[in-house]
Length: 164
Image 1 (tube, rainbow, N blue to C red):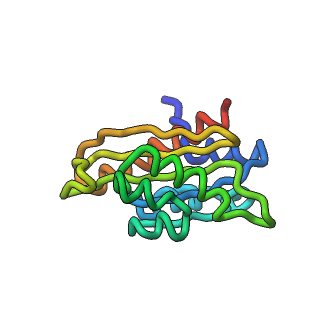
Image 2: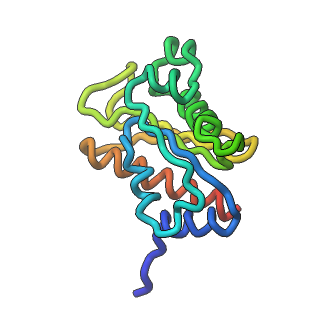
């Protein structure tokens, strides 16, 4: 049986091949997404860094998510994920140049609901060039399973981006 490709390894290889930089903003994943990327040798050539904005206020103060949006909808919202992904690129700019790719995670790992959303509600944010979008996930399982699935889905989408 052939070994399955590792999305994180292949995604980093794609970033390296294209010369694209990446920045990460995490909430519910608490650094797991950045840690997965850091596990790949050579990623230092493309990874600008990651910010764990677990506290909703940090999403505004550090990443630059619109406070009015957070006040109106809370942190578990598709537009919040999009702004996190888009704005982390500038927040982690190097030499005045923002990162080419932004990834973000926000959601509810549980066990309790947050912002009116049940556990397992996750929004992933993506920014590549001028394009910014989000994906909703409705996940099941315990906190660890929800967080791991959010990381896995983020890496799968990153792999799609570098293959386009």
